[in-house]
Image (cartoon, rainbow, N blue to C red; front, side, top):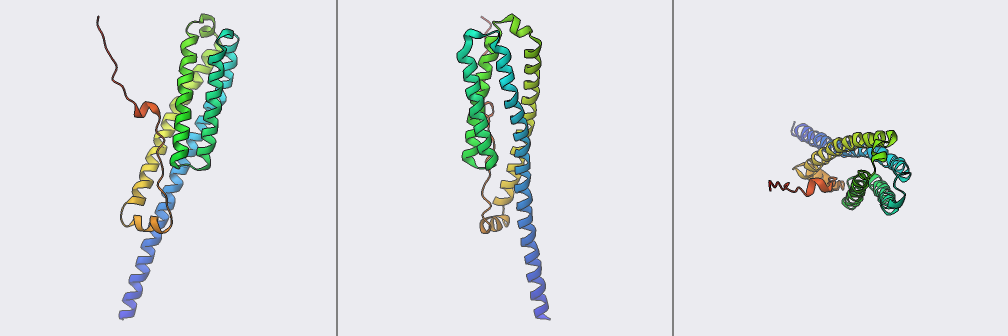
Length: 195
């Protein structure tokens, strides 16, 4: 009888440990899947940029430095995405991607600011369509990034909470890193002046 009770307890503990392990695997797969959605949207964003630059080239011939900076920033962001895709959740890869994406956003901002000085470019149908597609894609990236960050938080919570932390330590479930974008980390209060 005592042997039966011990056996039931051992089987119960084993099933509990298996449940914890499977929960960690599911959470890890969830954040990796969420990153795949970021990959899809960022790839679309990066694919739109060369068309945007080509359209702007015809009107902004003497703004070559800005156009080249956009392409360089895009190429750097593509490389950052490739590194992050190889290891979603890795702190260094997420920081590299965030830095490259921030640089791209800044150079695109300069491009759009310069385009304001070219009324023909602003009125160009292709440029307007590309700008709209880019804006839509930016919104999709923001939603995908939020879903990814939520999945990372759930995974990290599972691996850090007891008793999951024991299983996570035994099977090397490493912490995952959020994807933080500059606008999320540097919030400035707008300055209002009535003078």
